[in-house]
Image (cartoon, rainbow, N blue to C red; front, side, top):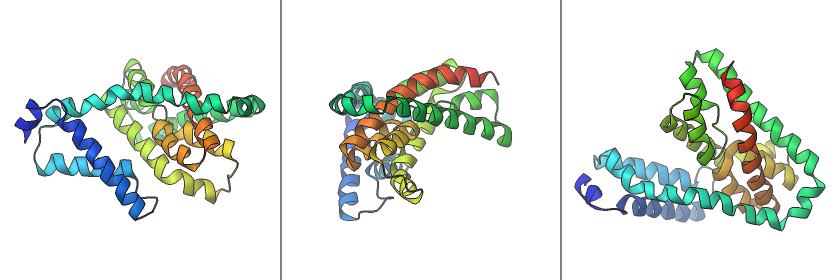
Length: 229
C-alpha cells in the first residue's frame, strides 16, 4: 500500500475526500453532534493508515495537496461577511470587544495550563495559537519557538471540538443571538467551527468568518506577549 501512495500524487487526497463524503452521508443518516463529517473522516483515514500500515510520510505527501486549498477557502469566507456589511457596521464595537475577549480567554487558558501541567516553553508556545486558523497558527507557533506539526494537531482538535460542541454549549448558556453565536464560534474554533456556523445561518457564518480574520490578527499580536511570560 505504501508503494501505491509513493507512486500516486493524489491517492491520499482522494482518500481524504472519500472519507469525508462518507462522513457527510452518515451525518445525514444519523443526525447527532458526534456524527461530524470531519471527525468521521479523521477517524477513517487514521484507521486506514494504521490497518494498512501505510508509511505516514508517503500518505502526508499525497494528502498534503489539500492544504493548498486552505488559504483560498479562508479568504472565501469574506463573501458572506461582505453580504452582511451593514450588520457589521451596526455592531462594530460589540464585535471587536467580543473577539478581543475571546482571544484573551484563549491565551489565559493556555497560560493556566502551562502552570498547572508544567509545560515547557516550547510546548507552551505551540499551544498559544490553538484557536486561530491553521494558515496563521502553524507559522506563528514556529516563530514563537514551538513545533508547527504539533500546533497543527492542536488546531485541528480545537476546531473539531468547536464544530461538534459549540451548538450544544451555546444552547446550554442560552446564547441565541446570531451575531453572538457566530463570533463565539469563529473566535474559538476558527475555520472548522465556521463550517458549522454557516450551517446554522447566514449571519452566524458571516460573523464567524469575520472572527477568524480579526482573532488571527489579534493573536499574532498577543501571542508573542504571552510567550514572554
